[in-house]
Length: 126
Image 1 (tube, rainbow, N blue to C red):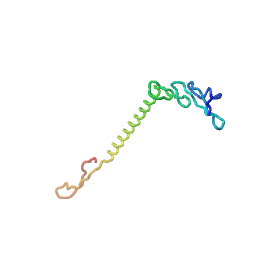
Image 2: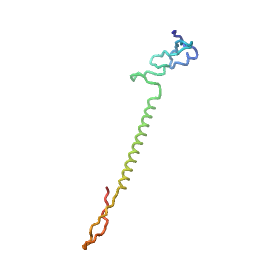
Image 3: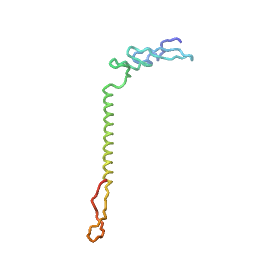
Image 4: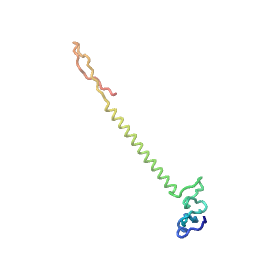
């Protein structure tokens, strides 16, 4: 298959970051474009840049400070949600504990003549 320069408008717009557009002929009579990238660029359309400070390739995207703010914001929101969940759980546990108060009634004789009288004893929490 012969390789040739891409026809217009592919020659100007297909490859990014100064890449050169080349094409292979297809069996149907058309062509399949591909890019020959400049130094420090890669990807099918030269859309990735090589960051010399980091090993590997980094996709061109958000600036580093913007990413930091986004990550910190997401962590703060997650912390607030977890804190609210813990407070809700503690309040719910405390309410359940308050509802578990039981009153015990004792039937022991309080008089000397042997008659049983009912009296309330102290309230205990279980």
